[in-house]
Image (cartoon, rainbow over all chains, first blue to last red; front, side):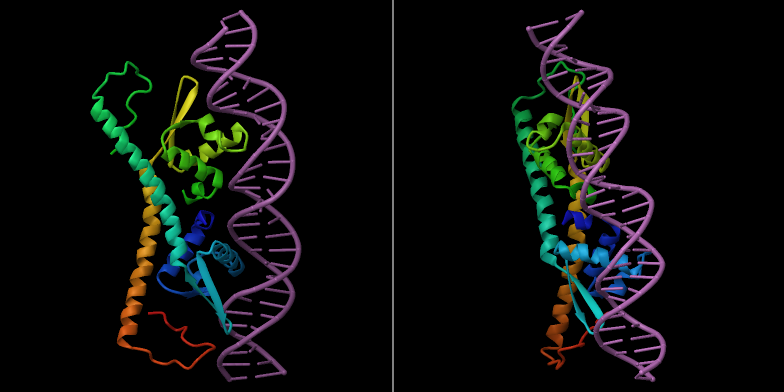
Length: 114
Length: 114
DNA sequence: GTGATACTTAGGCATATGCTTAACCAATCA
DNA sequence: TGATTGGTTAAGCATATGCCTAAGTATCAC
């Protein structure tokens, strides 16, 4: 699913779809590639579950799936939280052991967050 | 950068790094692949900016870059917000034009572009 | 029916990706 | 000093990805 978001063309399509449903040719509009290529990207997006589509008459209308987008966000958010929790713990540790002068010049203070 | 998160092995590495810095072999540990492969993934992660590393003695220590992770989260969050805003607008519209019974099952309401 | 429209399928090609082994440095360690 | 550990480079290979053109199919408008 990150796979699906990995391609700029696909991100563009997702971007477009976030502004509302669109047909295949509408999606293709801003892209400088042939329709079959757009179809392929669309397939990747559908396979990832990020996008749904249904055909009515000769027009296929595509919509985005908010849930799956949220999942991706969640994954990142979880990881970031983990990292921040760790930084907090480190902060506490440093508060307890203030400025213990480590006699190293190579590996010293990398924790220069923020 | 989504590209970097697209590979499961790389996500595993990111996951590990969110729990704290790690050496290359520590990253390689849970992965069922050769060290050079891990190196390649590491390079992708560094190129994306998601991970930094520095070598001290003969061990290379890797850390994650929170900012870049946050950027990815932001991209998704922005898109999701866009989508939700749209749904809200649609909700208002439906509230104004309640239950107008559209008697079509084939090619109905496609011309919904603003 | 004829033709235009909106995709779709098929096939092919170039590059990118992911992996491997073999060989090579550089810092420790005995 | 010579072996070991931790990482790195190089080369090669298989598959995946992204793109194209050409040739369908299925509406829809006359």
